[in-house]
Image 1 (cartoon, rainbow, N blue to C red):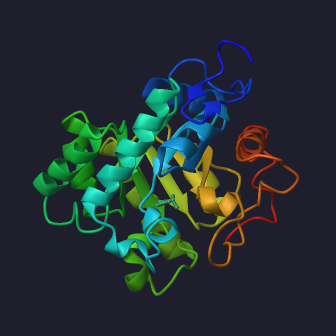
Image 2: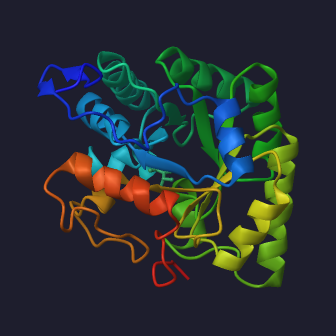
Length: 291
Ligand code: KIV
């Protein structure tokens, strides 16, 4: 095993894939990738071991998503996830990366109710996650959140926004369905995205949005990297829930997901296959979309 192979309490991981970033992934590096047209890879991570394995597989960004409410806690939606639970999982992911000198960029979700009251409440909640070791926080929605994003960014907290299907508002949206369909809805989403970029959001997750709309936004947003999930291949990067892409989702996989375990003999190989497929543009293919 080469000396660059990460040591973990569970043994020595295989050497990092040649695609793995050698230098820590940073905001300037992510902007540079977007400008060069190199696709950004993101996976959710909730614990130390999977975080270390994803990092060794070359994943650029790890999202401590509030989807942990479903996949770790067995909840029906993300609405019941507490800020302290997000802190616990963020600390676990960050410790896992530290054990293996990991280089991934860590984003932590602000959970439902932790940023809705006021900009000051959002700052207090974001501070908890940043002090847990996150590099960036993510929050859902446009419109009223724009002011909150500006407030956080001005105080040195990098922010990822999230538009389209926003799982924390699933009850208001009437279910997990495609958003931004039709001219009026698309224009509203576009206006929200541009305002979030102006407020300083450096990344924008677009979930279950028509491919043409997410591709158009990716061209228009020159200071904000779009990350798609069920939003076609035209975004600057892709994100998947780790359990979905490993085929261990307790429910039915969304139809835009590919099971990357197929044909692989390890989780690390499945994650490396995901990284390679996003980087070379073969994931998602035109059959894998939400609309
Ligand atoms: O919580 C999460 O996992 C997410 C992704 C679906 C983008 O927000």
